[in-house]
Amino acid sequence: MIQPDKKIVPFQEARLHFQKLSEEGKVIVQCHGTFDLLHPGHIYHLEEARALGDLLVVTITGETFVNKGPGRPYFGDALRCKSLTAMEFVDYVVVVPHPAAVEAIECVRPSIYCKGHEYKETSSDVTGNIEDDLLTVEKHGGEVKYVGSVVFSSSKFLNNHFDSRPEPVKQFLGKLHGVLSPDEFRSHIENFSKLKCLVLGDIIFDRYTTVRVQGLTSKNRILSTQRLEEETHAGGSLATFKHLRQFCDSVRLVSVAGTDPWTSSQLDFHLDDKENLILRHDKVTTIIKQRFVEPITPGHEMSKLFSVNYIDDELPVDVEDSIIDSLSHCLKDIDLVLVMDFGHGLMTDRVRDYIQEKAPFMALNCQTNSNNFGFNIIDRQYQRADSFSLDRAEMSLACGRKQLNYSEELARLHQKLGASYSWLTLGENATLGRKGSDETTSCPALENQIIDTIGAGDAFCSVASLAACSGMSLDEATFIGQLAGALAVKIPGNKEPISKSALLKAGMTMLNV
Image (cartoon, rainbow, N blue to C red; front, side, top):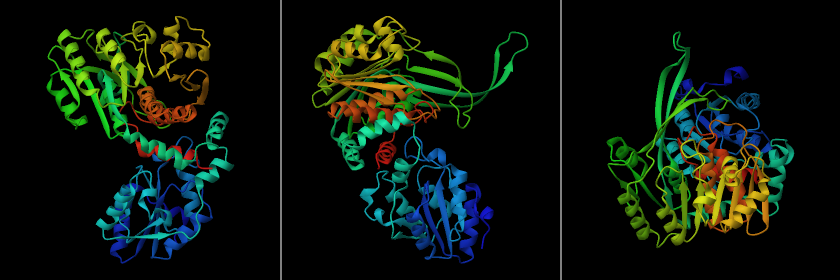
């Protein structure tokens, strides 16, 4: 029998390790999952799997890659490995640094890959990954078996009997549990696909330059750094477009960009739909926000040193005319217009007036940043919004003072803009929501392990706007927006959009009681 401390195989060494065992004629059986809280269902599952071969390899998703919502996994990698290796019928355990199972299967290449009976119907898999898993098993000559004669849910046990979430979060989820089941939640998210959306706003490219701080120069006391790497993310309205594309079949983008070659390659990479109306003009500077950051330390928020922005202040008149002409052609079949006003020139008075008059349902995010501070104020620029979201600083500027009764001020702004839904995000504290004339809610922050807050507000607005246009209840719409924001703060910048499968899995897990 293999000793428990010898059962854990590092992911980097696992491929060669299991290849050697296969060449020796061993029939390797693999089970993959989170295995957050071991229960009788897991024991039956693993025992039945082990009986099918010579060796049982259990691969578990690394804790930083688990997509089951804030607070999960409840037990970290070390404790989950400890529980699994203590079982006599588990031969090896591998922690996999990827969110899906494909890399785990590629690593083990089992003769038999085991899933629970509930996965025989692939439609039950909200991640949409099961088909890829099965194809990967077959590609390497393996077969899939369904095991587990007793079924329990770790998530249900954790949600009901473990103190895995702060009390305000548990109280808010308690309100939802009585009116919203996991399957209903999934159905509502799936229905977003029917919405035809248009995003209007500035395209921004977020350039992250990672540097190592070496100290201060001896003569001028200048911060000295060593450049390590650099990557460019699709930000601004382009990030919003990518969020919506995760949920909706039809999304169009109207914006403007420069004509420089690097812009063309970036737009070609991010936009595969030729119907998007990106106006190119040689007198327009493509907006870049370059942030110099230190390497990410696990468990800590990204440290940003300083930023350099490349931004024009005014839009050429002929470009303004072209934007309005483009909008006139593509608004006919649209259900939702999401205006992302970053205050960088695209949303001129004429463009604002036109979209407020013509949009069927207009969701608004009018942002304050270092480039437009004090100028891009929501109720001075707009007279209408069917839904809107803003943060603490934007609300303070709209009111003209720092000390506020946030609920009262949100109600005032809600009425002034004639909104059906409105939200005020208060960072780590909560998000206040309002629907109609008198329905209110407060949803606490769902995630306190933050990597980067850049883009979290855009993610909230993107998904909450879909919920508002769909007419969801205020609590559910706010929960969906908060969940999108919680997923976004775990992503550096706008490196990737909010995944529909990740949001579904997290939401359904949190509602599983």
